[in-house]
Length: 233
Image (tube, rainbow, N blue to C red; front, top):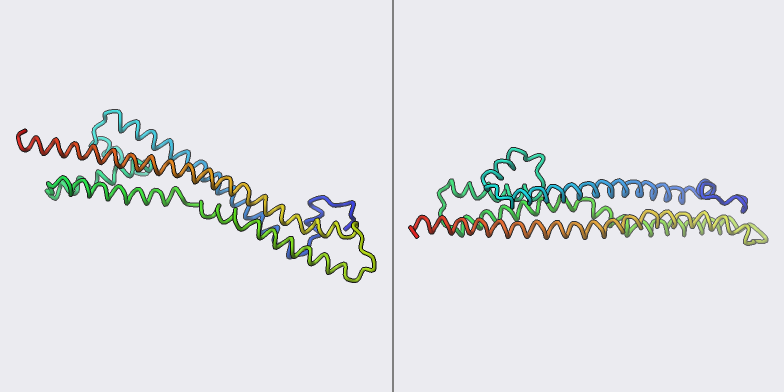
């Protein structure tokens, strides 16, 4: 390749087939990571909106039974917090139907159901994070492999030359370095997105755990009031 014609496209087209394969792999990974980033971005925004809408309704004074009926009716459109609430209420009502009167048993059953639902919801919210982490950590090394291979290939081509100048070396080295550049292009957005999403998911988790404790306290107060009423106090 002429040293004066060193555009990115020319460098890619004139690279060895191994380096081209590495570049193609990294470009595919980059496209997949950007798709995952946008999916996660919209998914987290939806989770936050649904949680905020339900929490607003929860604290508006609507009865627990009405909230549970609404959650059961709109299960497919419900957000994570609403599904956690529904799991707790479902278990609470099942235990009441079995005529279990012990407040501790009722409260523990509802709390365990909510914790299990919380874990399922977090598994969904955290999906794709491991992929972004892998892209961020592995892509630079894949690009570096392409660069090392390209440099080896370039120097092999110089073996039969009597005189090697910078003009003859530069194109081959440049071809190899493109692989590292593409590796970094794939890794940097993935790392930034991973850190941002991990922080947002931690906030969602904390918010939902706080709700579980608050709802548990409400159930405990209701059970205490019912016990006092039954005892005539």
